[in-house]
Image 1 (cartoon, one colour):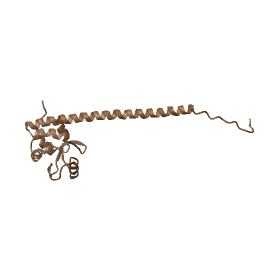
Image 2 (cartoon, rainbow, N blue to C red):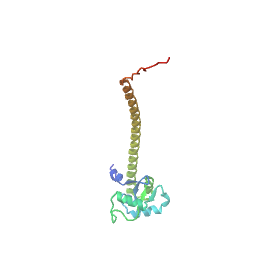
Image 3 (tube, helix red, strand yellow):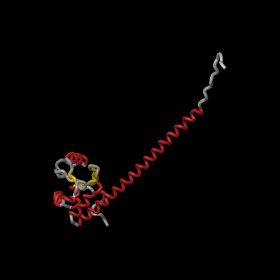
Image 4 (cartoon, rainbow, N blue to C red):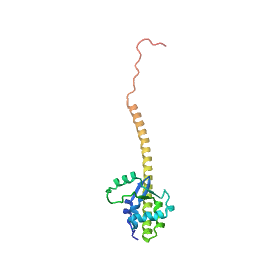
Length: 171
C-alpha cells in the first residue's frame, strides 16, 4: 500500500525545537488538508488533550530562528502568527480531534516516520559508542607502543661506561 504522504516529505517537516522532535501546526494542516486556523481551533476546543509536552507555541526568538533556518520570506510562505509545535504524542492525539479518514492515514504515516527516525538515532548512538571504545583501545595501544619504542631505544643505546676514578681509592 502506498503511503498517503511520502516519508521523505515528512522527514523534512520534522524539526528539533526545545530538544524535542516536532512538526509545526502549519505543516500539519497542509498534510491533513485543512487550514492552519481550523487545526488550531479544533485543538483549542479539546485543549485538555494537549498538555505542554504534547504541544507548545513557539516563542518569537524560536520563530525567527526557524524562519531563518528554512528560509521563509517575512511576507509569505508561512503565516505571521507564531505556529504551534506538536510532539509525537501531540500528533497522535490529533487523530482523535480530527476525525477524517485522511487524518488517520496521515497520522499512520507520521508515526512510521517517527519510528524510523528513532531507529536511525539509536543506530547512530550504538555506532558512536563503538567508536568511543575503539578510540580508547587505540589510545591504550599507542601508550603500549610508545613504551615498547622507549625500551628498544634503551637497548640500542650503548651503555655508559663508568670511568675509573683517578687518584687515591679509599678502602
